[in-house]
Image 1 (tube, helix red, strand yellow):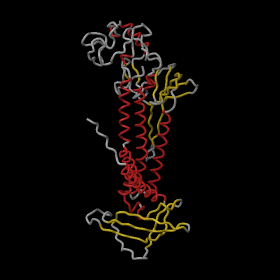
Image 2 (cartoon, one colour; image 1 turned 135 degrees about the vertical axis):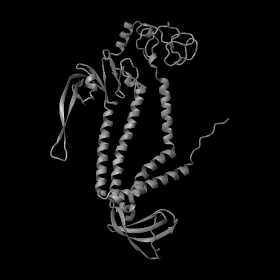
Image 3 (cartoon, one colour; image 1 turned 30 degrees about the vertical axis):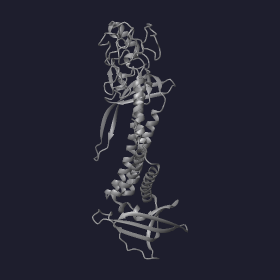
Amino acid sequence: MAKRKKNKINPFILVLICACLLFAAYTSLSTIALGFWGKTTMGTVDSYDSRLDDTSSGMNRSRTVSKGYSFSVDGKEYRGYVIYRSDEAWPRLEEGEMRSERISYFSFFPYINKPSMLTNFDQMGAGGMLYHMLAPPACVFLFLLVTGRLGKKKKAAKKGAAAQKNNVRRDKDMFCQGCGNKLPDNGAFCSNCGMKIQKADLDSCASCGATIPEDAVFCINCGAAANNANAQPTSAASLDVQERDNIQSSNLVGFSDRCNDPEILATAKSNRKSSIGCMWILVFVPLIGFPIAGLLMEDFPLGEAVVIGVGVALVMLIVNLFGLRRAKKPIWEGIVINKFSKERRHHHRTGDESDSYTTYTEYTTVIRTNMGKEKKIIERDSQRHMYDYLAVEDRVRYHPIFDTYEKYDKSKDRIIYCNVCRMMNPIGNDRCKRCNNLLFR
């Protein structure tokens, strides 16, 4: 049976849809911009038509009004034409008759213009203001949806996740089953004991072909060691306690290379996308919320609301951009040179004459980097995780993509720190019990 061809939008129809979306976005953006920054002048309406469409429709939606007008700026004449929904029912203009009306325009580009009544926020109302603010992002979303870009991103993400899942070795296959030594990625034999590394299927027994559960050490059908048919049925579990402890301790000394693991990098990329999404939310909420509050609240002037909203949005944007920029900085290493705590007081201003104070403890951990710079980790009260986790003379590595620290020697610890979600885990864990990401062992 022949494969069914994918339905594609006719190019002519696609161009028509894009033109309509572009015109809708332009109309809303120009209306808002003219309302904030447009200048006004007197113009003349030379063509006018008002058609009754629906007597039962809501306010300002019963008629379709078309209007042609002209105005002069610096001795040059400009023309404009608009169609909009309204209850406006002026008498039709006779041939040669004209009517005066105020026109909003940009002084630097008068070709963008509208009648002032269409750009007046008081006449527009909160609903109209909200519509014009949400229309441009809605048009962008519809454009991405129509052109299929959203679907392509999702498919690419799924393919990347599937390829990553197939390429990543399981943790039990990263260590030799004979001695527990860490195995090289492309080696054929263990560098410590010389045992041959089998390239068997991860989910089936190399001896009998039976399916092996993910956490099984031996095949449940024939008893052979999981994924190692030629090796003797010896695993880290059969080693004596002292030898196993030595292996575990040796694996906990040194900086982990899991910071470059595809799974960790995928998590970092996902966190970055979430941070960018939160950044835009924090930018657009005050940018839209304050003007709406200015329209709805009588004692909150619209001009002041717009200025405050733009100011808050700019502050949020700058703070988040600095955070994203910090995540792109390189990894650095250093040594803890000092730790100290200090009692501090926070002053609270109250309406009456008696002020109040709050006392808290500030914990500081000082790190000298390999470049000779000093970095400080400042924590407060019970949130003293790094202060308790790190000791003086400990070597540490800073991971900017997660804004967390990794200790060089973890062999003497009873807990291990998750560099992704900052959760403290038992030292024997290979994955975090909260986020299930690989721990930097």
